[in-house]
Image (cartoon, rainbow, N blue to C red; front, side, top):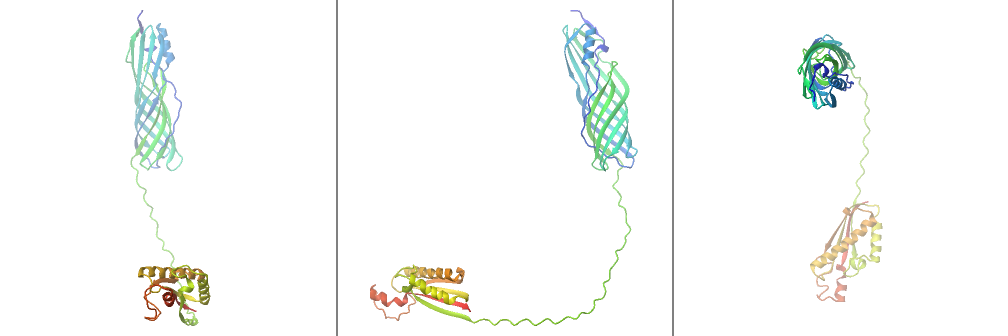
Length: 389
């Protein structure tokens, strides 16, 4: 296989254009002039001219089968400037656009790889258009002095004569951006710039840098408060009050005389209200309680006390439960028929300890009809009413 030597001018890549796109924030510059510093970082992009690489190989009798490119990298810049007024400033700085590479596989068997690094300095005239108090748009035009450091390597059928060409040259640059001021001193900036560069083997092209960064402005001061002359408020003096004749208020109406309190006590025979040894109200008992309720209608009740009594027949515990159930039955009936709250009526039970029969009037302990009939007056329900008519 014939060995081929290829000059550097046949293998260098040519840089091409990149479509713009940006969304960021930026600083509205203050009216007062002053110095500022800042730094941006972002992505750079260049287009490798694959057709030129292919044609260069063909000129040496070599065919490329595949070409792969790395046309994006991280770029940054550090800058400083002077703002003459809110519309115009001058800015200079250092930039590094990163590195871009290609690798070509050839027939006859071999490879050709190349790399370019771009860095330099710039000087721009920056024009600012304020949109709001803090938000503005700016554009720049200027010159960049860039160093293009190339390196090329070949293998197999490809031989490189000048593996490390280098070129320094001044070209133009332009840019657009947006700015937003967090304060008079600190701002955020986003922009896109296009750098015209020479690739060190006689070709020129463009590299675009889309970046964001911060800007710090020196010499800002807090606004001085404006002193205002003190003007006293006019004082209003009210005229002296005139005497006003005040009529004597009429005497209050006499308080109504308190109505006399009515205290009454009604005793109902338990046998007329309930069956013997029962606490269920019978129809005849309901009639007696209805008549009692009608007599009390229209009265302002203070309290009604219902007391159930039993005779001495039976145990104390049993008689207490029976008398209490009977008192509760009468209470419930009066609450429903007098439309009173349950808190207005008190129910309690009493066993045969409070008889109305005379001692010794009903002798005997054996429960007989005669004894039950004799003790009938002790089986009763007392209703005591305290009310005002």
